[in-house]
Image 1: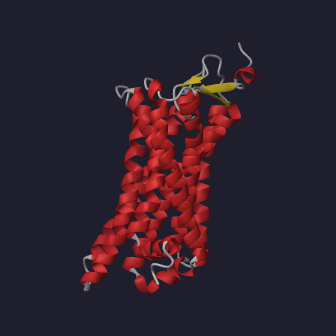
Image 2 (image 1 turned 45 degrees about the horizontal axis):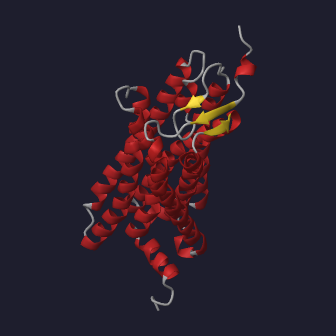
Image 3 (image 1 turned 90 degrees about the vertical axis):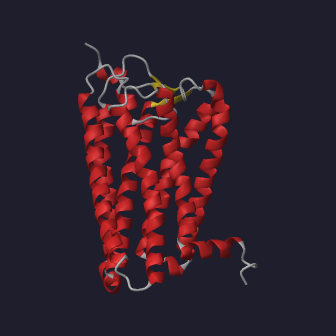
Amino acid sequence: MYNLSSYSTGDFTLLGIPGLEQYHVWISIPFCFIYLVAIVGNSILLYLIAVERSLHAPMFFFLSMLAITDVILSTTCVPKSLTVFWLGPQKISFPGCLTQLFFLHYSFVLDSAILLAMAFDRYVAICFPLRYAAILTSRTTLRIVVGISFRSFCIFAPCVFLVNRLPFCGTRIIPHTYCEHIGVARLACADISINIWYGFCVPIMTVISDVILIAVSYTLILCAVFRLPSRDARQKALGTCGSHVCVILMFYIPAFFSILAHRFGHNVPRTFHILFANLYVVIPPALNPIIYGVKTKSIWDKVVLLLFPHGTQ
């Protein structure tokens, strides 16, 4: 018998992307650029929403929350990944690993909930435009934000305790650029069945329920849009919803691939899986502010005014 506490401490080693070690420096160049785009783009978005009173509406409040969550998601993983790419395998402490995997998965579930809240916002705005202000009051919006934040915390907080209880008496080498739940749990010298099933079933069922409700919302929205008498109104509504659908597809497709590859993708090459997992945490946060900036006219006008203040006069 071994002392569990003596095997649950110590550092892990992040290797990077197995099989592509000689290309790490080259891979880091686009990763660094995309990460900077994500930070700058989301910061501009947050600044505009904060200073422009015309953007103080529930839709933009949810959008600012999405921007903050995207910054947390990318910052949780990308800086450490870049360190691995530039300096080789890196040590990470056990508490640091737990912190990283918590914020990674918490941000993912929270992103999904925010997309659902934004779909509900668009549903109310398009299907009940005269009652929009009465339905989505400041108090209701605040309750939605607190509710989805608390829900996301309750879903993934148990994962931290499930990993923390495991003994690690063998290798502590993680063939990845960051810590994630199942990847760390598989290094334990104990039964991890509960980790596998909880880490797979609970988030999947939660996210699938979000996807179903989002699909229902946009189905009702499309039905309402095509009943609008004005062609301009239809185009405006479709343009706004189009940007939301782009963000939703861009978020869910790689996320589901990464989750399912962990559970069923035994034939998926590890190199491809890890490379794709890195793209998933950096590309959506970078593209979200670009898509909303281009597709949402009110934001695009403020961006142009911010960047070219004299040219718009």
